[in-house]
Image (cartoon, rainbow, N blue to C red):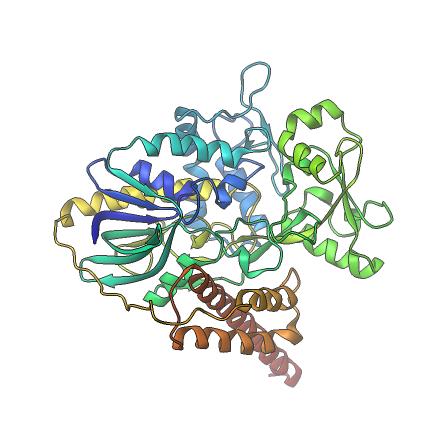
Length: 500
């Protein structure tokens, strides 16, 4: 057993920034499921939205755009904090050495993305997430009070009278780690779909751990599908073609080579993501084809190569030169707006348990995230979580740690193969872009059977079991919420038909 003041599950932007902002006299453990740079934060291309020394922009404009994109279902208090504290964390990133792109005069270059009324996206070429994560890692790695373990699987978490116990598989050995406080920064749920822009770690583990401990989970049905993922059906992880490409003037075209967004929204290619994704699905139904393309060939080739070097290079590897060729795209799972419900300091409904980043539900995104607000949310609320812990742990910090004794499953059989594949197929067929109402009840029934089998059976707890259980739990919550809404809508319609 090893004891820490704070255990942070996840090494993306939220986890690392939380560690960086925690008091230097606290003993901290950061647990990375895979290698440190394999996370959704590192894949973020477009940038980080925020008002920082911007004379033509304001937090109020940013808030208004966020509300419009989120269908006005955004939490107003959390969103106020997000847009008004953006300058704190963008300024901090600059202090940490993040190399945001600049104009020839030395000012920061701000790009435009779908749903934004102002150029407010700070970026490093088309690899902003990786640049931010790399700089955060440089600073966190040298902190003497922070331990980091890579390729470590959390297979269970339990509450104790003094905090939490984590059972972690590292280097083929299981060990229990105890802490007074815990912060879930485990990312999204992309692996519940057959195709996703998310990394391999995105199986909803943190949400599942929190759910099983009794934490409130909210709006897990709010799943965002990015309209311009590279259309490669052979790959489970779909290469994302950033929103910023459309922000720089790219067109969307259908199977006939025609632009079509004018038929669905007057913001054209720069409408919010949910609008564009829905429009592509409607256009596919209209044309009878799922062949869609992104076209930026009308722009200067040298500009494209300089502005989007990573996207240009990756597309070349697939045989497409984006300066000359139209690129096949189609909507793909991308982001989760719901998650572990938290307050404005990232506190969950369980004392001493916090959640930050994509696995959390702050309410800032409403029912559809505005482009490039994800990195900002991860930083703002992980910093606030750290500040809250710093203020509390001074009073409660002590050397007494209780531990939980986890069940020994070493002699149990492995979980049956094919479970994760079946869950992904169910979710792809029932809850993709426009949910298929007629299939959701049967989907929920089967997912419930899988979840009950995994929870009630005796299986060896390894990575495959943990991820299968997480996917089943997350799919169960999503489809349960979805079926509930369908049922409520049907009841309202019946009442209206009766004239009541």
